[in-house]
Structure formats: structure tokens, C-alpha cells
Amino acid sequence: FTIETMELPGHTADGTGYRIRELDILVLGDYLSSIEFPFVTSPSAYRSTLAGLIDLLRRDPPGRIVVGHGLEHTATEALAIAEADLDYLWRLHDAVLKGTEPPPPPRPCAEELTEMLGANADAQRSELGL
Image (cartoon, rainbow, N blue to C red; front, side, top):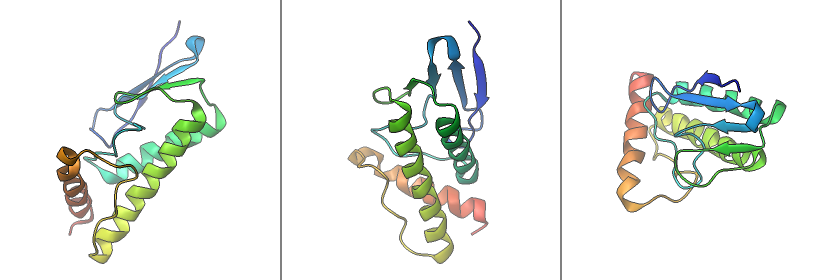
């Protein structure tokens, strides 16, 4: 079978996804987890990656989406997570620009991960030159 690769920057600079059409599967690594929120190194790249995944899930949905953290998803489930994650990152962008409190994550997170919310805000400030 053929393995299609796709660049998925934003979580890391070298994030990669894989699609195997013969198996009707899309493997996304650290994107679209139902048990974690987005951890970003580049908020704008992460938003672009999510926008591309949303388009793919709407126009050419695979039957199974496998992620690095949590259970696999249907295309409908993955689309809902992608849209929530994109909304969170835009709300983070807007909060940083306005100097207001960052938004809550799109899903509850474990206590030990709350520091990553601050890291996301710091990454957004850096990207905006603030």
C-alpha cells in the first residue's frame, strides 16, 4: 500500500501525519487528542495545520483517525475536536493581543499540564512580538 505523508507543523516544527487510503486510516500523532489540549511551539503554524485538517476531514474524510494520545476517532469526532482546538487558538491569539486572561482549554486537562497553558500564551506573545 501507499503511505501519504503530510507536514503538520505547530506542535513541533517537524510534525508529520500519515494517510493510508487502502486501510482508510489517517495517523496524526499529537494532533486532535480527545484527552489533551493543543501544546504549541508556533500558534500560527498550528492554526494553519488545523485549518488544513478541517478541510481534509470535510472534503475527503478517512474512516479512522489515530492520534498519539487517546482513542481513535471517526471523521466526525475528529472534526469536532479540530474545530474546538482552532477556536481555542484564535481565542488565545485575541486574548494575548488584548492583554487579557488566556482562554480555558477546549477540554479539561490534568493538573500537571496546566503549565502548558502558560507556555501556549508565551508562544503566542513571542510570535506577536509582545
